[in-house]
Length: 107
Image (tube, rainbow, N blue to C red):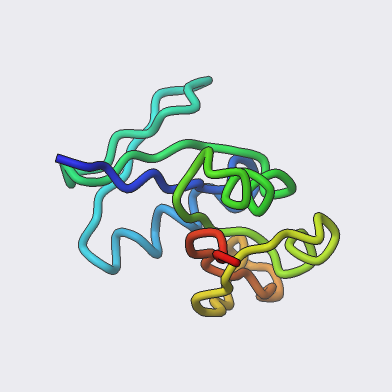
């Protein structure tokens, strides 16, 4: 069985990201100080990464896809596919634009 490796933002938007996945039917949990969350789908493997690094890791093939800010895609000049745009934020703050990145583009 092939696993889909997903980069999830570590830090201030981590819990908001987990809630979005929960609304889609996926439960994600992580132990304190761990970078490897548990996802209740045997075909998914999560990795908590700083949002600044996710686009680069997708481009390099370290992970298959991930969630990061559109600004980080541009700043890294990452050769990735933006699959969709999500709008969410930490609880009580103005929403920010995040993107779901897909596999690196092929040339």
